[in-house]
Image 1 (cartoon, helix red, strand yellow):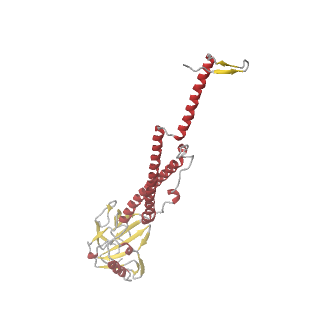
Image 2 (image 1 turned 90 degrees about the horizontal axis):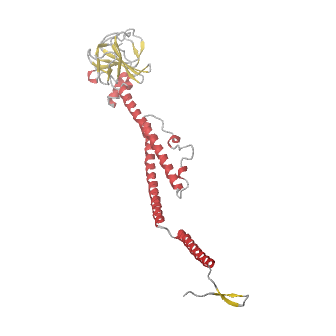
Image 3 (image 1 turned 135 degrees about the vertical axis):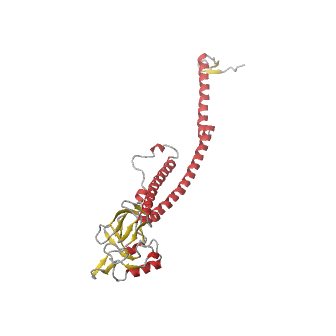
Length: 323
């Protein structure tokens, strides 16, 4: 049975029974519903502030895991950066020194990325600074690796050129030691065998029997094999590239033709006594960019230190040349 409620009426100075009209019932219902809604909203605010939902807990765990992964990635980037630094140091101070190349400027290796804000898309997140820093380091390492890759491509090219250069320059005697009678005359002022006057001798004379093999002193291409040069008689000229040309004069016969490519140690002809000559021998010259050099400085490819010193002593004797 519902309770009966009364109110005091000051006009009649008596208590009157409260009549529950439809308006009264509606007002009470609205008040009840409003209090429930207000209580629910307050509980939601409290729960939202202090209690994580299952979804929020899952996202928070994912965020913590991502922060750990970024920290590990940062450590890996430190290791990679250290390795790249070691490679760059070896590149500048070893490889490029060997091939006489200038080191890559640090301004090129360490150059950043210009233009607009490259990492603007990473802004607005809770860990934006971490993400942008990691992305920046990764971009920088990527560029350094690219620059280093290009440097190694250049070094490979230089190594190939260096190998070809070392194979091309004159580096051995044109006549083997066991075939020599003696080193007849060296580079420098000598007595001319015909005029008996002092004359500068621009090559080296190797005395040997007619028919003794003559060898190319470096890789190259035969550009002359004729007797049309004054005084040289039958002679061969080899263009080794890089400005080097060698001349082999007074030959008895040829073993090559013009245009033929030869390698160091190939048999190219035979000792003779043709042209302006006083006896069987080979007159040998080394030219670099048109300048005639002392051939004795180009026998490092096969002689021991003792043999080389003996050859220098013989070449320095102020005797008479053979041509």
